Image 1 (cartoon, helix red, strand yellow):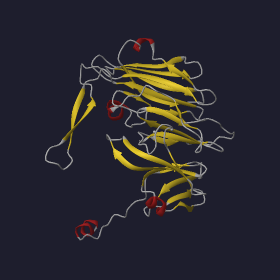
Image 2 (tube, helix red, strand yellow):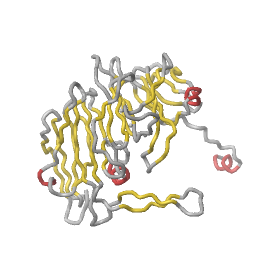
Image 3 (cartoon, helix red, strand yellow):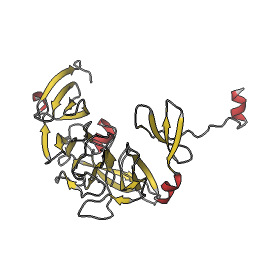
Image 4 (cartoon, helix red, strand yellow):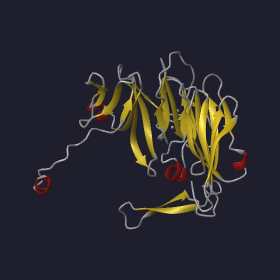
Length: 328
């Protein structure tokens, strides 16, 4: 019966709502439906409410969005240009859903900038915060009780903005296009390790930010053909470590954003310090502690550490060693 309906073109698939769904509270989620409206849905009462209409997306030519937990602000990304599988460049603006005010996200030295990343932090805090910073699309933003904490990446450097009306503060200065990556992944980490271009992580209270610094100085480049519809493809150079060639050098840092900024490096285990290794996971387990998974290049030794980000001390809590011919 179903096969007959398929063959007669009577079996139609209804367009599903967007899978871009975020939990705002234990009982409420935000998602964009098939009509393009942003909906707040209460899973306990089964009630829904339109919090942002589809016309707003059309007017601002929005490609990606992120709503603050208090439903006051929304982060818009537009003019999005894909880089690799997950990464993209974009311009960003913050929109006040009550007053309809708009603020462009730009570093102090540039206007109309394109960022590698930007995002808003996902936790509301009970006390006021006073601090500053922000990226063509890679970043993050966190909503506090009366301000929106924003991290963005511009020219491979991390910027931080404590409020929509405050100036941005540059957290790193070593960034170099295609060579040194602060808070965002290079091709190897994006494609093979993290499966995302984002390489920075907010602490639960928004007071600290953990981030990777990847140095591709010694990694040989490979030409990636790009087929654009022209007679000949265009070539794009990107660092690609083949077997036996140098890997990117990775370091993990945590910056304190509450009060005077202070950056601390979290060191790898002693057995990996002088060897090529990867950082494959960073997760906050409390306001001041992170769990970090380190992996040697042969991928047969995995070490899980818990790091105190106030002192930089890391303690090994688990180590796995694969068999003689195996991988982890």
